[in-house]
Image 1 (cartoon, rainbow, N blue to C red):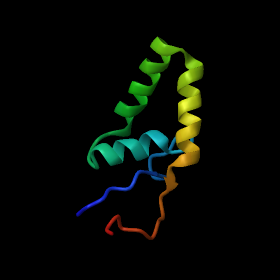
Image 2: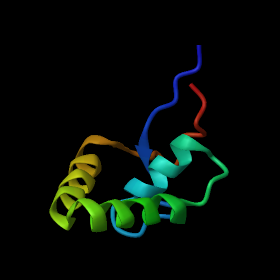
Image 3: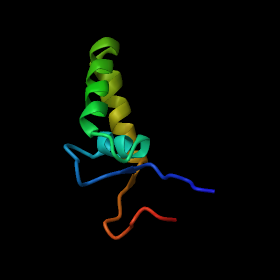
Length: 73
């Protein structure tokens, strides 16, 4: 069975790499800008503080990407 691991990524990272890591987890070919825009729109409609809090929690919980790891288990 194939298990995908959620990781933050350093390649397309702007702050902590959370949105880039989530984008890669959802679809490896997807553009991380889409996930960033979703975070911004959710922040505008739900309030900035909850989205910043969620982002920081994800930054602490998600594993960092290992540059030597090819993604295969």
